[in-house]
Image 1 (cartoon, rainbow, N blue to C red):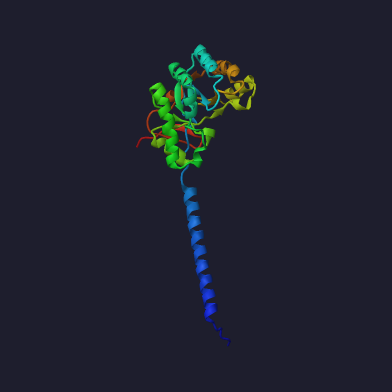
Image 2: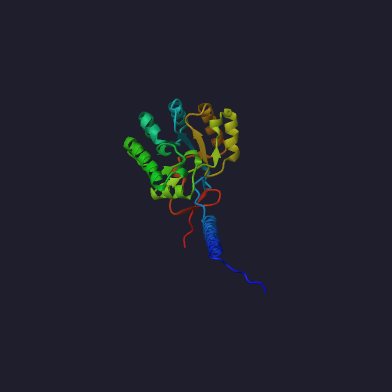
Length: 257
């Protein structure tokens, strides 16, 4: 029979290996636990569209940079008797206060698109709240009304973003139809894209600075109406009361117990 003799040095090495192995196992367990917890956390989805059967839809415009087309868009909307929703960046509000007031005067929703147009998911909860509050304050000072809707820049969101929006007593709004006007499609291509995807409760995304949007807008309005739909601002298309959003981001009223 052979006996293994341990020196003090070998015992120290063995003991160190055991400690390292235990530490690695602990890290693995903790990491796995976090991963499982993250995977198990339900995804909080913004409102992309609304569960309605009355053929009401909303058209919205994001304004973050230029302002060359805003007056033209407002003239078209007034001529067509359409009330829309404008999501404004706080810096844009500061730069073009007269346009903000004109949007509000014409009866359109004037809503929050952040203060500086950042990727919201890269911010801390405190920074998110600051982006929301600062933009709200600028809009309220000019219009007398505090926004209740928020659209994340770039459509970028996670659970923390949606939570921060709700904590400000606001709705987090996306879209289910992207006109892709920022890619400069032809007006007819925009009409076809929008009408092919249209459904009751749809929210259409457009921009106030895209090249072909002014030419496309009256065509889009006429085509949507020809399909039997009515335009209302997003503040009127969303449902009142407690709600949930499904995996597609469709807003439903919560079922009562």
